[in-house]
Image 1 (cartoon, rainbow over the protein chains, first blue to last red):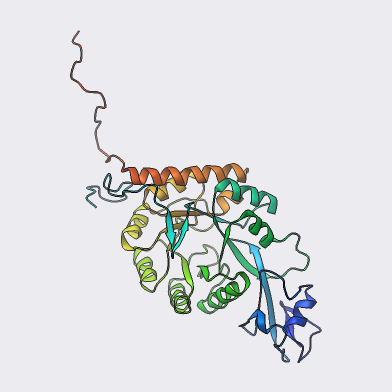
Image 2 (cartoon, rainbow over the protein chains, first blue to last red):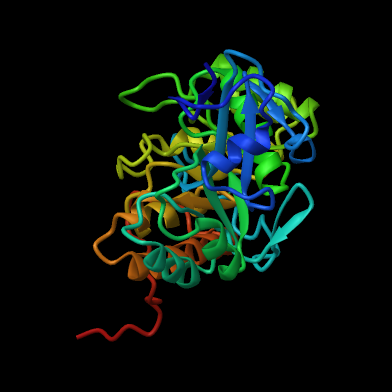
Length: 67
Length: 275
């Protein structure tokens, strides 16, 4: 199972970060978005090539009002 | 400092700080406004944009949270059209590790290496966790970040943060969102003496006089969030904070009169009639 923003997803091993973004309705050009997989930053340039593994935890973050 | 007062002082030596009109510079970036704004707590993005305009602030904080596909309106777009620079924060982080990862994600998301570093140590008071904060600050500075740490009002910790290369220090006046103002003015004035980097009062501001006092104590800027966002009229409070920060800075640099125990006549006795 691959976790996307804390929820079980239908993503599978071999799917890319780009596909995870698609699940959230985000385009690759989306402004103000950053991705971490298993606590490591995945740079925007690698979104289309970075393959997820079974058990990956994907966090897709953006700006929120705060502090 | 030749101030003869003991304890909290609201004054520096008159005239000691020339150049009241000098602009604030943090890590080489010059800011015309000495008011930093938090974006949290506004009832709507429209009201936030209006308050930003009224405040004159050029630097506003944003947090990093999970994408919400149902979210309405884009904070990023609103802030871009307001013409302000983003200062991402690590709000909600309780460990150096989480704060460092969050900072790196913020750099990726917003293309800025500036980070308002928050490492919280207690859920009720949201007070900073000093050892974790210092550890995270050191690591982020080494990684090329411009680090502005939210810190306690401890002058020694402030100095340690400046020593590891933080671009400014952001001591609290009182806990985040408490509106209790500046609980220890003496410590704030000690912090001003302890570090050469800009001092930005962060947290605790409740109303305009708190912001003015911070500036009179020698702070270079004030950060206001809840005080504006949660005021009954945020736009009006933004104007008040702007005026207070300007007034406090002017008063600081004008050099106030010393406090005296007894009156000093402001009208000469000479020429006084005798009846």
